[in-house]
Length: 414
Image 1 (cartoon, rainbow, N blue to C red):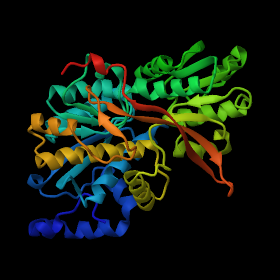
Image 2: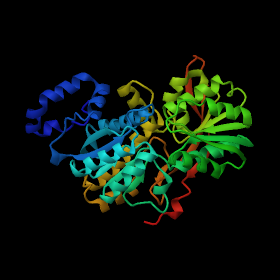
Image 3: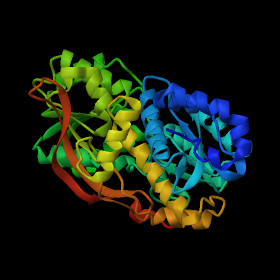
Image 4: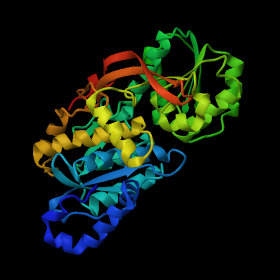
């Protein structure tokens, strides 16, 4: 497997300079190779023969696995083309923003000024995106988000160089609101961290949920202690609870919710970030009975998803999450624009036009960009179930929404 090093045989100079390093990388295996590249120790093609992609993501803090999975899904798409996207050789330069807006901004400045990068991806959290994206767009760079999608870039603040491969924050939670409405819950308590994505979460949920919101509770970002919130939920006694806490916070919430004895009496509804493979592995049986909405699950039968799941398991030896699928999809969309333009990212007008009409076969199946260059796609009910063999798995149920966009698209004027 020649991850990010394909094309070596095409340059005798490259072979002479890097042959030893290339042989060493081939010996360490695919999982270790991804780690080497993420650390910036890149074996690359000659500069003129490749397009650099700046991948700024969150790899540390309890939420670091989100960025790790998005990175690994993205690199898997590159590996499938032996170091290329859309036939164009690429170098993916990965750095950790540490979930700190200032750190993300500093990395972006270095990528723009020192590395002359014009194509970016990787951002996970909306607070980091708020600090980084304006600088990228001001520099006329292209950004393709594999996750973060705050409302301020979806409506009047949309931009022709800004694309989202995941979902818009509000729509992620609107799907859960529709699910809770379908399940017949009349009174609900809503919880989310106190930052832009958390506010978008609860606003989005309420666009589709028509029952009574008993209380909205905002928690500290990246919190892992919810004792006070559990006590408040017990006091309020709603029909059900909706909570959005990604990464380690979500793991802690489900465990504490179950340990507090609430799960057996008050159903728990979550969006995709609240119930995925890593969370399932971490919380075990505490996830049984939790209900989620998602745009993708590992049991999807479409060919693109099956190929992705098989490849991810083979290369990384773990189950893929939707973050990994989104990273993979982001790379596939970029590949379509690369193929159409020959990788000429500096011709931003042509490149973004190719991105806007990309028709890549994505893991989620049905997909197109809306007028604000955010996804229009389907949403499904997902549940944690225990099979006959005793193993936990996530099972796709009924479709919740079809061809669903986001509420800000009509405000976008490009």
